[in-house]
Length: 83
Image (cartoon, rainbow, N blue to C red; front, side):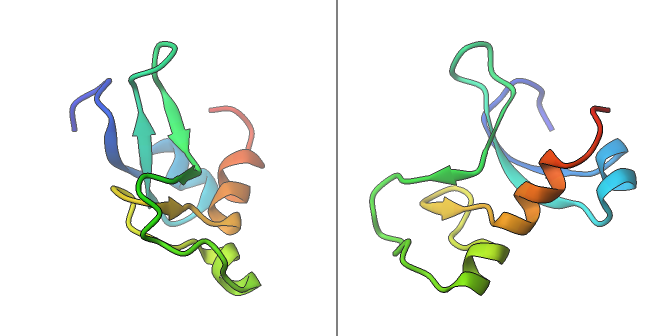
C-alpha cells in the first residue's frame, strides 16, 4: 500500500488488535494534508441512502463509489484510545 494516496485501505496491524477484525475504509489524502477516513461519500447518487436501521449499522455501497461506512464500524473507529 502506498502511503499518502487516496483509496481503499484495509485497517489492520495495531488497530486490528484493539478493535477486533480489520475492515476496509476509504482514506482521503487530497485535502488539508490528508489522512482522512471517509465515513460517507456521495459521488453520483446511484446508491440509495434511504435504508433501514440494520443497513445503517452495517454500512452499504462500494467504497469507491457512493457509500456509508456503517455505524458499527464508525463506533469501532471512534471509541478506542488513540494508538
